[in-house]
Length: 252
Image 1 (tube, rainbow, N blue to C red):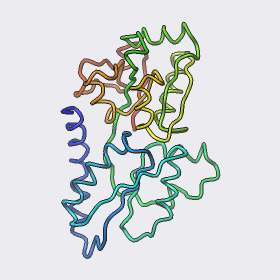
Image 2: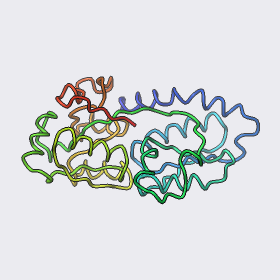
Image 3: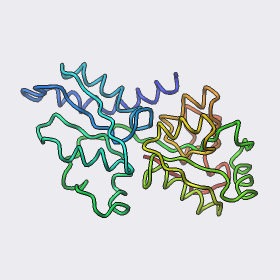
Image 4: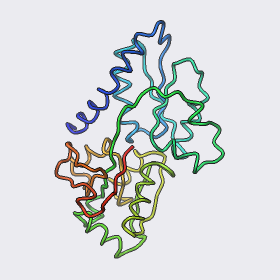
């Protein structure tokens, strides 16, 4: 929990200037503000949106409501946000995969670069390779790679949906390690994480924000952080490069 609080505090500190500027805008907000999160509750995007919403309420004097609209790799929520009245009372908590979505979903009814106005960056979060400790024997990344190669296609990794950073992090891992694991898409990282903890899938390439508490609590085993440097929150977990997979860096 302490690790989660530190991550969220760091993210929110970057949003203070944005919130202060919004609070000073004349006659805004005139009604409750909605934050659309395009994934199910409990995932990485949701984990940052909720404390941000609580903080923003204290700055603007109106309710800030989270709406989770999951599906199709986050594009269902993005579509809903694009159609909302452009009156400054609906915000969209997007992530890197929304720049990827047009390549996977050619018939989107919105354009991320035309139908949205960027407001600010809430957080930059590295991915972490985590496994269910009851289902995977490996305690190092090298051992996991060996375990996968011994049974190609048998182990599964979950993601927040097709085209999300979780999915692409897994596909990149397969490419650089020359391994085969099966992809299981969900309607958000939250449901995928629930199945990982329950043992229905074995591996996730998750954002550190939503995994940190379960790692420190022993529900998950972290094998490597997909970053150039170790995380201050999990200093004992090596980077992917230190663990033998050079150049494997993924963040959202």
